[in-house]
Length: 388
Image 1: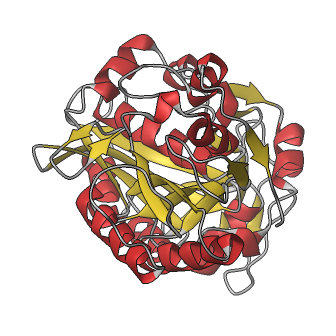
Image 2: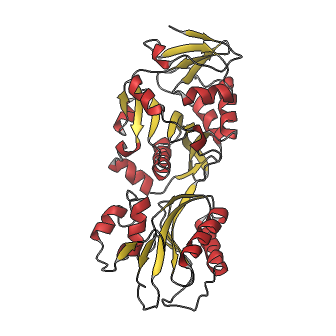
């Protein structure tokens, strides 16, 4: 049956009572409280009539588990061509308005009316709705938006004015979800396109069970940074553990939020002899800084922690911060080379990277971190050291 909702009381019936077409209820409001509550229970608004939202819970539900994503060769070639630039949360309103106005095959109009726009824009301002935008030569040519609660991203709509632009945004969404431990993307409605990327329809009951473990207080709220840097930090002078902790604190405050941290590893000095071994660890850092700004900030932090550079060559140091990767970019400038040119030769780099991004595909060597570690011939012993 279809339930009529009390506009003054934020509450929904159990999704299992939805009609065969998924319609569950009519009424309520498209404001922050109603929308966030709906998504928490796996319910979403599809359209409204006379300013009354229609709320749905489909059976089956289209779900893409992150590990099931199929990265086709053709799509990978488009992404690795770097002709598109993808940003996150830089122009949410432009994306949702483009989704509402872009013509779609088989549709006469749009369900994204002004009340939807107002509701989702407010949800974005409060940090729960996010957009992934694709740019070509500075022009917005594609993107998507959706709602994030805990480790689930509910995709709402996407658009493109250039071929593959929305697909590139979707790949970046997958990467964000993988970096931050998301379980799946709720794609809502079955489509051939989503199926080609690995999404599968599952019974509503199974979907409800997946949603039952959501923890609202563990949601990544606020603007999501557009980039990530993978850093290797470590040293072999002074109080090594305390210096690692201080470096992490400074990086988190000045480069960006640390999303993933590897185990701490102890290794002998690489390329020279010293009285004390190194402690190293890898960090995945969300950032809005460009690569050069990350580099200069990292150098400043090294100096603050006692690093004194003595020209070329290897030497003992209290702190070293290397930029190993930055998104999937290939950078070759006088000051910075990314990916790090010797990362594949060094077990003390690959082992902590394998803790946090084993799936990452090296943009030059075209192999995953896990594969590079397996193939690495470096005889250096890398020992896990959780405490000193």
